[in-house]
Image (cartoon, rainbow, N blue to C red; front, side, top):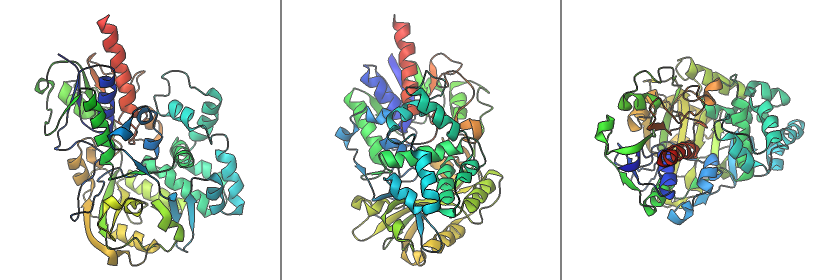
Length: 470
């Protein structure tokens, strides 16, 4: 009998499997797709030689993840590449706010009226990423924080909506940039906790940056699988699990799936009927003949570019997606990995990654409104497009069964749902069945390619199996 079977070879499933295998346990992973990776994959979606990331592309919480940092993933091919600027936030007049490695450069991009306010906002937390990552990238009631003072100070700011945090600033640049950071929660900016999302992304940039993996996000998954295999683990692909009887006997079954899929496969009935899935995204991957012709010079140096520009426009876009309305002027999160990674495209050519927010299960085509928005800040962009791969919610859900209705967060992150995932429980990785566990990003700390959900699920499994061995 195996010690553990993991269902799903996304970053959290692979992290859980690798951590259990490193503890000497026998582990096998079963993945429905023909490739591993889940939300961290790389494919030639458009033309030969153009390597695209269908889901995640830039990894601020990955490079700063306590779980990944504790693993020798560089031995298995993972190499982080850093752009000159982690992120740029352009405006129609050709200027931009920037999220730089330096707090000072970031602050000065907001203008003299807001530079001091930004420095005061981040000053208590700069240089404390390691303890903050430990304290916040987890279930908040799972033990005492390492740094209680910083934890409390951050909590008082982080619990606020971004719309409230932005009252500290006078100008559109600071407000727009912070609103864009908060928008990564894929939830209304008026929701509690969105300031915490914005501030963590900013601090990640000041700590280790917003890098991309050389070769694409697949490199993260391949490194985790390489580590797993080095410790005797086995990965099976093209193996769809419809019920537990499809799997070999094991002492523990660990699901890197949506909560509803776990309940269906494990026969747990309505155990997760309260889970709510949030808005989806409309994603376009581009093959380009040249770099994006941004009017803001800072955007040419940035790995990620947020296209808003104002906090008002960003908030309206998220509200529309949340309330089931068609996108009109979308807020876009874009990435240009080929600027720093020549393996992504043929020489002289480029890849470009962009998505905007749309309602869950939306079936429309947002290509026109997305490209119209890009053209506002990069006139002539359409002339560079060699090919595009378009994916709305139905295609995103078909690509990854965890993304119910196209929700790439595997469950709404609005309000307290970012902390209470997938439902209120002291140990959210456990289920009603003592041998069945959940390790996907549907559990705390939530969305992102950081492996922390898998890390804490593995610790839970390990404790239980070790106790039962005594």
